[in-house]
Image (cartoon, rainbow, N blue to C red; front, side, top):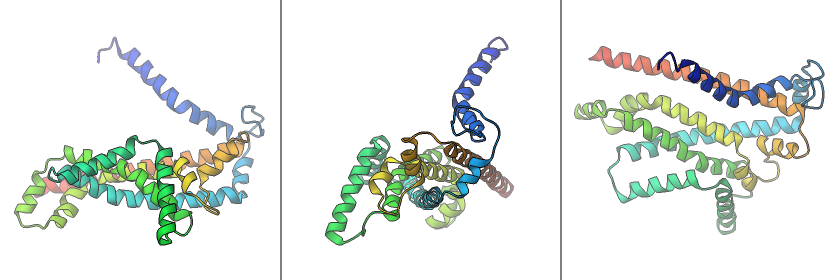
Length: 276
């Protein structure tokens, strides 16, 4: 980059950040607005944050969404890591090609198609086998695992393809069983990718409206569904306060997990260099 082009690059970068973060900044700003009109400033207040603590519907929906997202992200991280490892390290067979095609299909299919397909599947299973008994947290969780599994597997597979398999081969030649090679050699090197996949799966699950709308039942309403239904009746400053809390929480979590994963990776590389 030459000094002549530096101002242009800085301007383009600034416009990109402005496009991405200006709406979030405005949302946070108006969450402290005393007026019920979200676009008219009437003074500074914390009343909408206090109102959140008294909104039982939102609290219950948020707790349900957090549980589903955490469970779906954990299941997707485990299954997606195994699927990504099979795609990156497995031999080229028809089964591997079929697995890759099935995972890619989830990435390109519209969510409304996935929601309808899962709804028909669960209805037929309930009719044939009596399981699941109605729709609720379990069916939403299963749907979100299917929705997010493919994303985790692609991230892990990409990371594995960038790794040099020499260390794994050396450990196997020294007599380490495959499971021990994976746990002690491979997993520490892809841990950051697994954590990234977990965070992405958590975000996708927590944010999902379409699939959850098809798979939810009485008493199982997620937070995005409540927010969407309320937004159709008009914007409320309480939603700005809720969004501000979510943005702050996600930001802190991403920073902490990123730092932790980076420090673990550096310690692992240091141990490898020291061993040699």
